[in-house]
Image (cartoon, rainbow, N blue to C red; front, top):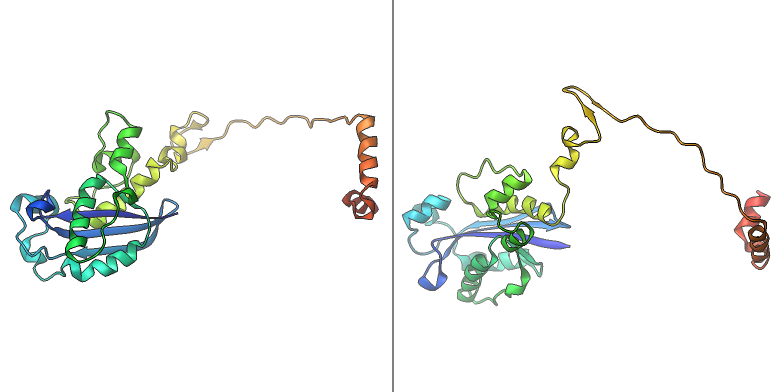
Length: 232
């Protein structure tokens, strides 16, 4: 199944208060693994970026001044996502912004039903446990050491790995010999337990079943595969 991991960065919390998108990042996945195809754009919000928000994602008003507007990339964005489900961490936030931008650009909104919220998935799977993207990266052993700031494409790549594990993907410890109880492990070698060789089992077929099978073969004529094997 084709899905799109999707994330945004913004100038604030509420598009209704005039806040806009400043970055979009998408990662295509197929059967829960990245295909290598991505969509990424920095966007000119046509307004200032508050300093407290710059501290979160590092995107300043000056940096974004020469970037395209959302309406300039909207068609390419919609083509990239196609009709695939969107996988989003805290989907309500990002969907609120992308739909506000799509409306302004004259495009149809994306139904919220197309979004799969990994924040809610994590809360359902691990009740009472931290469910931020950083917390889930730590839980699943996903390397997020390069995440000094929030970034839509970087976070989409991280979320792709987190989503794989959330959906039941193989855990790293399954491949770590030193963490299993079935092996005797030293610093240099891992020794498999001694293999037990059992004698071959014998199966006795009752005479009446042999006779019934023979009669069945005769009903099939020369096409019976058992006759061909016997003649060969």
